[in-house]
Length: 191
Image 1: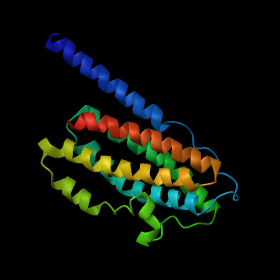
Image 2 (image 1 turned 45 degrees about the vertical axis):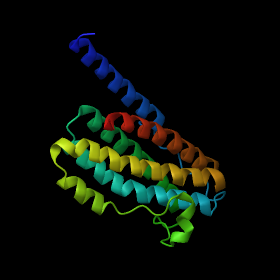
Image 3 (image 1 turned 90 degrees about the vertical axis):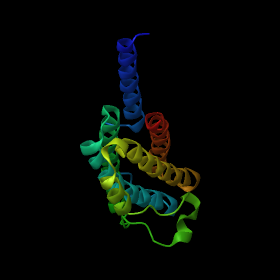
Image 4 (image 1 turned 135 degrees about the vertical axis):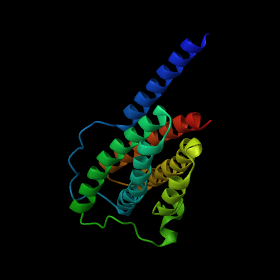
């Protein structure tokens, strides 16, 4: 295999991987209407609140990657994640508002022991990433985002185990599937 066909093959692989991540993320689909105000429990509410807490720092990290990443695959992934999470955020906030629930999770660490704890606000990660040299940015970004996405999977798994709202549990399953696919793809990019 010559260098030209190898490069073309890598490009096709990156495109296919991005398409897989977008498909598993549910990217591009219109948000569904919020479920009825009945039929939810504390596990459903906590999962949605945790997703809000993860989305906010993730939004900042992916915006920075759109500016600073050197590889096209990393920029594409950051853009896909940003769009997916923005769609999820609309749906999540609508549910919490309809249920008259706060958007921020309770800060008691004991409540979050089953899913890895509360996420940070992202300020430290963002400051570190901003100072990261250009030649090391992509790997540092991917490493941070892998941690973020893993945290989302843990929060989703807690809802799958204890939630009762079928639409929220469906979101939790999509989050689990899409974030696992994203983490697998990011691990290949980080090598």
